[in-house]
Length: 82
Image 1 (tube, rainbow, N blue to C red):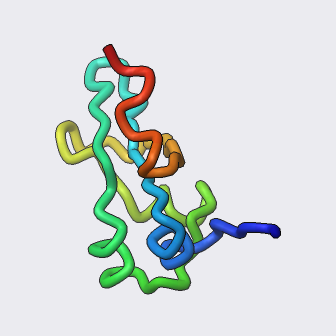
Image 2: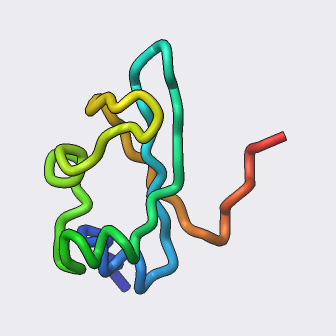
């Protein structure tokens, strides 16, 4: 079975999450994105590919548009953190 996670709706339907990470060296803030809110704003069919989604985002702390994305399954949330 092939799973495609190329849209916001697909991430919601498959219980995945996205984190946005600020690449500003003086900030480095990160936050879990509210996919339901993003779907309401951009549409469930909006692409989750970096070049399509990042222009719609900015850091909530420093307002930088230099953002990276991290995709993970909700079932792995918290793994790797002390």
